[in-house]
Image (cartoon, rainbow, N blue to C red):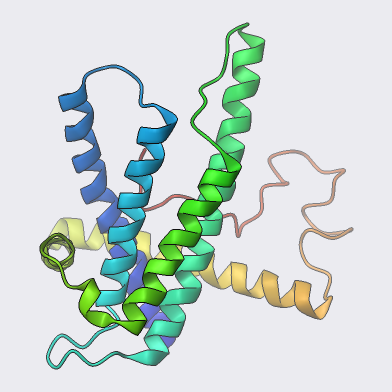
Length: 222
């Protein structure tokens, strides 16, 4: 039960972090003007965002009273981060394909904001940061990450915003559990929803083909 509660808590944390980062990103956009971000700028900002998200996630695995690490939570957090990053990668890939298709239909080039290799490197570096924090927890302590951590706690405790983000955290938990079940079914060779005869059979409509365990970006509006 503690595992479910912690996954739910991480959903709330990710949602609030995404909200705060959206405000920061909006401020950056105002300062730099209307010119579109280059691919380099996009991935630098993404790496910075992932670094602080990983750092904040690690901080929620540490007892703030004595600085001791809760290792069971650490394992859960690592798995959730991995699924989160893979979901982000898949969403970016699909979004890029849509932009490219739209560009071809309108006889103009699509935005070059997605690169598979760079996306993979950013994800590996982000997971590497998480491992680094485990090896040397003192690296996780910095003013910006601590500010994110305290801001998330403060927003979480507010009556209205806190409730909204808790609802998001619930759906995040359900999404993670569905992905885990689907992964276990694949490992055991058990026919799932994507096999013949299920709701996601190729003969069914596109709307019906959307799986219930699709990883949505609940926590972030880009």
